[in-house]
Length: 58
Image 1 (cartoon, helix red, strand yellow):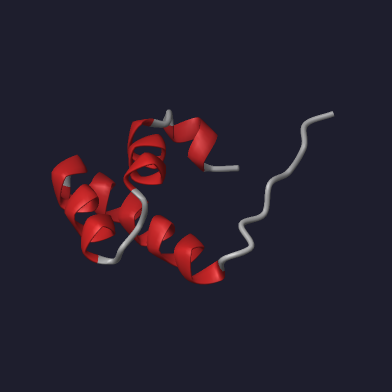
Image 2 (cartoon, one colour):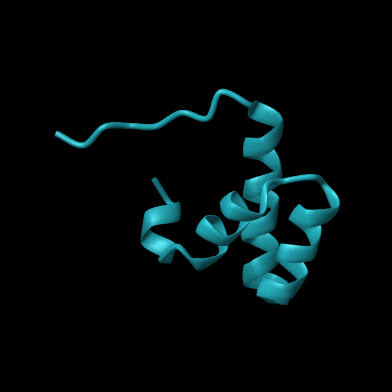
């Protein structure tokens, strides 16, 4: 049984969702800049932006 992870920080969750949409529309560099400007940790940014799309849909 796969464990579901819920992000406790809903503000971060929203920023990550926006970045994923930006990556699709404008590319990884735009999404990376968006997250950096909003103070999202660089490790989280790279995990999100390099994750396979099917993993992000969970």
